[in-house]
Length: 324
Image (cartoon, rainbow, N blue to C red):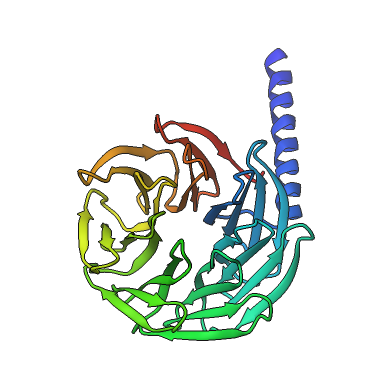
């Protein structure tokens, strides 16, 4: 009899949890993978894009979802904050970018100009311009105030899957399915250098904090560190065994991290080009990684629907965030 009662209690408790989970998933419209993660400039909030068309904004300290931004009609591959943390941009496979007012949770502008899905968005440091990259082979520079396209950068011969803007706001780097990285002058819209070392699609590019280096990662399983002035590769890091989705310098420029399809994250020693730590914890591909503004934490977002917060010094997983 006791076993029967225990079994009934177990079934009821799990049924209740399943109901609560279902209600929460219905409320936020989310039950899928994380495609992009980014910190607010003050490090207090964490925004993520999802494959179920919504942007989630978390309170980093409590690990709770505070806001859910709805407006896209297809999966969101990229999110980015302005430097003052008041606006957020999202880029979607629905061919649009949306600029959101964080406080009101309202879409201020929906930017339409690309003819195929967006994979990356990034604000300039002054917040006056937004860059978007898409599989229509172009990068568009938008005026944030007017929502108008100022420049269309054409140079890639296939889809553009990644972009970043230099800390001084003068240069833009883009990575494409044509296996190249292009360095652009934002003011003129002209390409300055075409970097050719990758042998596969370039999924991620990131400038170092001093703007002198660029790192890129892609489908060829490699991470490359480039010298911006010369356009030459300084190091090619080859310890990943699957495609690299995300690469990022630490805020002090002393560390580099990369996340891959085979569910691993690698911390690299920049002096030697060797791996320092290999982090494992996700059940699916690691789609996006980002350092906290103080450089003490690394956050990873995965197609398994979770966000893991890692301690940079120890390489240990501290918390796992789930939106249910």
